[in-house]
Image 1: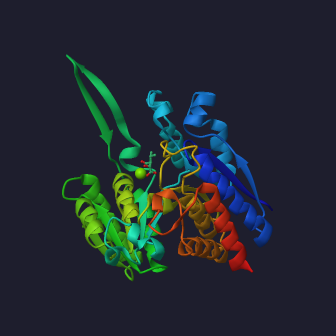
Image 2: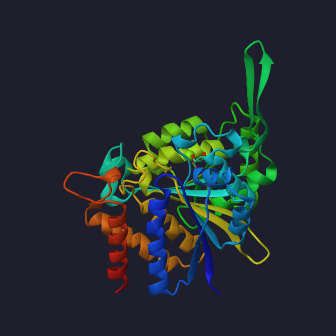
Image 3: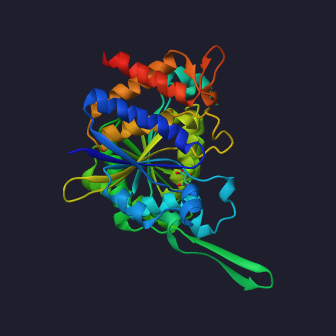
Length: 368
Ligand code: IPM
Ligand code: MG
């Protein structure tokens, strides 16, 4: 049976980078019997323009039925004034929530060729390989109440709610421990138990699960502010970091920047296994819609292409195909090709489409 992939390219540079992903999928269809059928839907500002909402019910249903969803990026200044419920980000958040994609995997990997593009010294980031496991469907992103109330006399009051339950914490921690076993076997659990009750519970539940089922994995617990500092100081001390939705959002941007460019980093958002052993999944680059360069053909498609590599690995169980794609990206970088965001002196500057061309060419060579 054909694989069914839904692409929601979204806004800004989303359509440009997803165009290259589509070509890579085509390459795997032609050369590796991947047999995927691709369809497209709108999510984000483009969907608001067409339908007045950030995502339609039909698209949510289509996403649920797909083997994997690929998202480019959502948002941009054009939609600054749309109602809060219909803002572009609401489409992405609803996709995550309705598909129950609670586990967000954000690898921060420093490509050898790009170690000098980092804002940190080469010796601090070279060989960096961290996996941030961010809880994605709970916490302050979705907790209720979430509102602004008018208190009168020009005074207003805003509240967001940070909320976690035992089972939410245990299922994300289990993902982190499982992943750690396939990597460096170390997990750092990150919260603010010195200030937040949700941090106290997080800490207790992670330690309990560890002692019950994962005592072979080395577990450290770290306060979130310290984790931010440690990431800047000595990022290679980490293997897998597991944390809540909001801290994960922040720490993954920090970790991403260590690697030299947000334009390089993929992510996978996964749900629980269903009765047939299938997992819903959404793949997206960590970077945003970059409205300042949208339409110029300058965007870096590598994060999106590497997100497809993650899909090959986590959704389609085609580890060798994923390895090949990652090697192709490595080769193109080693050959000196760079988009503007990762440009270095003496290298060859190319645009989105040429980067796609080079990666396809490298795939062909490595496949020969
Ligand atoms: C991310 C983004 C999103 C988030 C935005 C676009 C809602 O920053 O995926 O990290 O905050 O989760
Ligand atoms: Mg973010």
